[in-house]
Image (cartoon, rainbow, N blue to C red; front, top):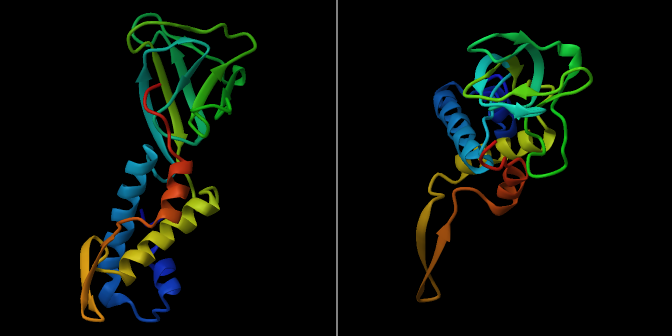
Amino acid sequence: MADLLTVYTVAQYLGLDEYADVQSTIEDMINAAQNVIQRIANRSLDANQERTEYYNASGTHLYVDHAPITEIINLTDDAQYSERAITLSNVIQNTDDGGRNYRRGKIELWKNEGGFCGGRLNARVNYRAGWTVATLPDDLRQAWLELVLFWYNNPQRVGLVQAAMAGETVAWQQVEVPQELMKVFKAYRLESGK
């Protein structure tokens, strides 16, 4: 995802003035690291873009698939039968319930909106979500960068490694993601389910 973490940024951290010959390798590592982070965090690490999604919604809130929400463009209840456009001034986005869904894109109805009618795929939301270079959390961006640097500097990073030391063979397991980076990625983990 070159717009959130660029090859240029990685090359700067690596101290590479000329990096044309490794550009595709670095780009592949950025994308692979993004996939690893998404798997660990159980969330999409996308740049801000427009999306349309349908939900089975009842009650006063729903959780969207992508976060953070940057703009709700349109929110409709009972989208399949008798559409009711929800007044966006009666909606709170990215609310923090302080629990397991912290940092998840939550759309909550309030004021004059009682709740979603309930039903199969009854709510349609058109929204923009994801991070920009300015809004991507600093610790997540730095950990993503450090994972790419770790992989670049340790090409044989995964698997059992053996070495002869003082006449004895010593073996150890190398890891795909260093523990300190894993902690950062897990801090952004979303629980399964809505």
